[in-house]
Length: 398
Ligand code: PMT
Image (cartoon, rainbow, N blue to C red; front, side, top):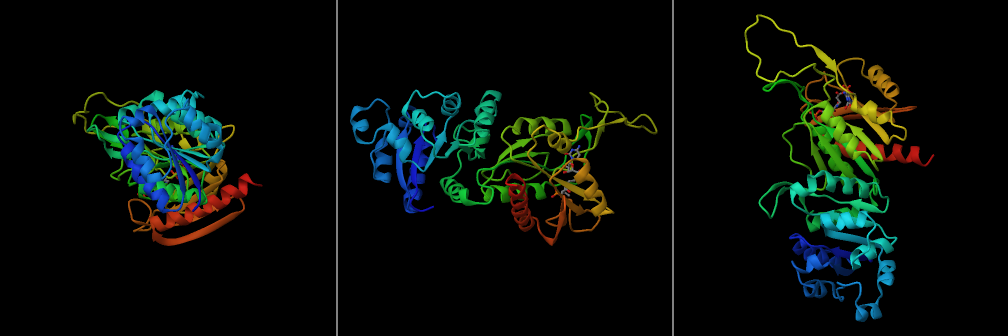
């Protein structure tokens, strides 16, 4: 990556101060950096800071005769090998996604043919509102655009949630992993259990901890993919640099997956989704009056089968948790759900599968299979991601 020409766009947000450190790290790694600031960014950091760190004049205005006499904006757009917008505000992303070119940065982003990485930073409520998410989905479906982050956690305004800008070191890692086997891929992954309410205090669920799915989300991120993790209720923190959407029930999981699907190249279903849910959830806590009771159950939607049945489905990877006849049941699911790959684990063996730190699996695909012996879920996830990348490219380039 050394020697890249990086155009760094800085938009208005408190995270703009972190971009000064990003410039320092980019320069240290041997990149040439030119910085463009929006008017909003100038309210947080001065152009002089970026000028001192980049060693280049900072551009702030489209209609600046002196700057245009040096390197004009079209020349600057052509100069860049990579554009990074960090922080990318909600306002900038909305203007950019709608095709506007009403300031220097949106104009450059419209004029460049270089990959554009957006590193969002905003208040968690702004990030989660449906209008922002609509813009993000639209941008995520654009093959020139990558969305890195945001992280979850404590925010400058005191809120906690998704919307923190990735740390500069992490942005550097994403830049390096641009060379990874899943670079440029959008990957959606389900993880953890679902909970199906019986009444306000009771539910049907299973022993999934989310460890396998979260390890895969991290491995896919490290392989260069942009990852959306749709997670059932688990006690794990969101992996840094992965967009996490928390859900409770199977129906919510399906809705969140469908929202994340535009632009998705690879879908991995690690979640242990409840196959059935109570036909109705009681509004109040059910009282212990009868000697016996039964709860009528109805079938839940099958998230994976629904995705695989789409007209142009992503590369679909399922998991199969079995207690006997592993190969038989896994291969049956592979063909019945029309999958590209299935990862089968024998959950009857203590110390592997549900809620353990280790797992052993056999992966099946049409015409092939590969066993992976017992190892840590992180290690297994890296090996699985390498195989997914291999099979994905074998399919898409054949
Ligand atoms: O979370 P951990 O504690 O780390 O445990 C990992 C795991 C054991 C949960 C994981 O490795 C695993 O096997 N996940 C799939 C478990 C499962 O429910 O398999 P299944 O055979 O019921 O479903 C087959 C596939 O269809 C799975 O990819 C599942 O996500 C998907 N499915 C199933 C039912 C449904 N309604 N919707 C689905 O998407």
